[in-house]
Every structure is written in structure tokens, then in C-alpha cells.
Amino acid sequence: MQKTMQGEIIDVRFIEGQQWVALKNDRLYPGGGGQPPDKASIITSIGTFPIHETLLVEDRPFWKIDAPDPLPLEPVQICMDALWRWEISQQHTAQHILSGLAMQHYGWESTGFTIFDDFSKIELLTEENNAHAWSKLEQAVQVSIMQDLPVIIHEHGSTENLRKLLSCEDAIRVVEIEGVDRCGCGGTHVEKTSHVGGFSILHWERKNKASVRITFAAGIRLGKIAQQYTQWEHQLKKKLTGEVNDRVNDLLSQAQEHLKNEKKWIQQIASHIPPSTSWIVLRDLPSIMPSLRLLANTIQQNGGKVLLISDNGQFVLAGEGSNELFDLLKSHGAKGGGKPMINGTMDPQLADRIDTLIEKL
Ligand SMILES: [Zn+2]
Image 1 (cartoon, rainbow, N blue to C red):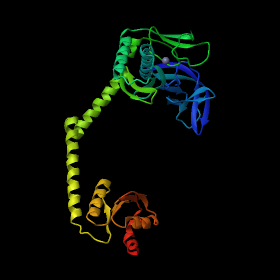
Image 2: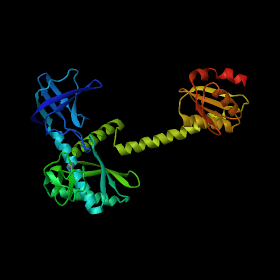
Image 3: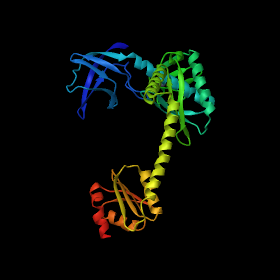
């Protein structure tokens, strides 16, 4: 859904070959305060151009234009993506409610808020790890949504009793949800809390000793997330040919069985290699390091000495005289280390010359 408005291109800049234009229009949100810019198209005399990214140049927002020729300075029509504005305003308003209630109920201050393309993140200052508090906070936000409280914007509000002050001015743009939050803010919001629609805390984790990071989503975005996960589950079911949990469990136990069998045959093969005082060198082996290490270890325990080289240049070295051979390999560019077996990498040319080198030992 598009919302059409008038504007004017008042400046054009090229920065590192990229075109940016300044628009005369107060209603398009250029981004900032953790909120991404509006998405829109501008209709000019030479064509229509999508805009959704801004850059501050001399404290003025410029919109990115993907066109090689400079756009003319002229009045333009701006078609804003109203559904995107609504979705972002829902997230932003939900954040006010969440931050206000976290402060009111627990004294947890909000820091570092960002709205991303598919979810939002906020940090709360608390040392507590109380999972129960998150579900109580989530429910309190949902109750505020249900109460249909007006979201009031005071264009020249007083700085008294603000949860957060953005600048040091005496009067600033204040966003107020009565009884919930009062905060200096330049972003976009829905008009009533009921317009937030729905709210969920998707995840929380400790960021550091002092703060917790909360991932949340609100409104139409919750539906998008549900749709995305439902489609993902259907794709997984198709790929796995069955119920996801059952099939993943099957595959994990199969993998475990393979691993056990692999261990058995490696040990059997190794036990058939007779102990020898000369080096056993095997090249171009499949690059499964744990298996190579197991094979090398078993040969070593049987009294042999072995150099195993994988098809991607990794190697394992084990047995008497390993250190001397490793020193020789190092002098030809191989890298690695370790005890009692030596792991490392070498280039293919060196792998081809190993036999000649070993003869010189
Ligand atoms: Zn706000």
C-alpha cells in the first residue's frame, strides 16, 4: 500500500560514484535512533526511483539513488510504503512500552535499541537472570496493548520526568503513553497501543555482567515470522521425508553407528599392518581428521611409524623419529605441531617428494 505526498529534490551529491539526493519533505523518516528509514519511490521527470537508504551529509539526510545521471532539482511525487512504516512503527511503539514497563516494574534501564529487518533487539541493564520476569514483562506489554492507550506526541514537550533524554535542549519531541512511558524520541509510532497488535519476546541472553539482550517482535511482523518458520518446517519435512524431530533423531543415531563402524575397521586395518622400522606413507586419503588420527595412533601403538596425508594437504605423523621427519618437512615449508602425534599441513608438491626426502633421513 502506497501513501502519496509531495516533495522536492533540493540537492544532489555524488560520493565515491554513488548518487545521493536531499528531499524537501518532513514526513519521510530518514532513519536514526535505532529505527531504519522509510521505504518509498520518488517519481521525477526522468523516471521513478526507489529509496530506502540514507546518509548524513553535513547533518542533512541524503537518500541513495541507483542511477548514473544526476536527478534534476525539481518537485517530485513521493510514494511511501505505508505497510513498512506501519510495521516499523509497531516495533518502535512496542519498544516504548517494553522499556517503560521494565523501568517501572524492575528499575531496568534500556540501552542500545535497534530495529532490524525481521526482529528487534534491546539491551536492559540488569544483573538478574530471572526467566520468570521476562514472561511477566511480556504479559504486561500485552496488557498495555489491550488497554488501547493513546500514544501522544508533544512536539515541544517538557524534559521533566523523561525516561530518556536525547539532547540537552529545554523542550524536545516527547512521546508519551500515559502511565507507561514518557521519553524523548524522534522516531515514528502508531497512534494507540492497540495498534501494536501483538508482542512477543523471542529470545533473551546475557550480553555481559551488567546487561541482558532481548530479541522481540510485534504486530504484523509476528505473522511473518510464523509464516517463515512454518515454511521452513515444511521444507525440512520434505527433505527429511518425515516428522522433523523423529527423522533428526534417526539420522543422529545412524551417524553414531557409522562412527562406531568406522572406528572398528580402522583398528582392524591397522592391526594388519606389520610393525616396521621404515616409514609407512599413505597419500590422498579422505580428509576426515579424527579417522586419520585414529589410524595413525593405532599403527603407532602397534610399534609402527606412519605419515598420513589427506587429499587436501593435512597430515598426521606418528611413531619413533617423528620429530626428525617433522623438522625435515618444516624445512620444506610444512607447518604444524603437537604431541605425541604431530598434525599439520603441507602443499601437494611436498607430498609428492616425501619418499625421496625420507631416503635422505
Ligand atoms: Zn519512539
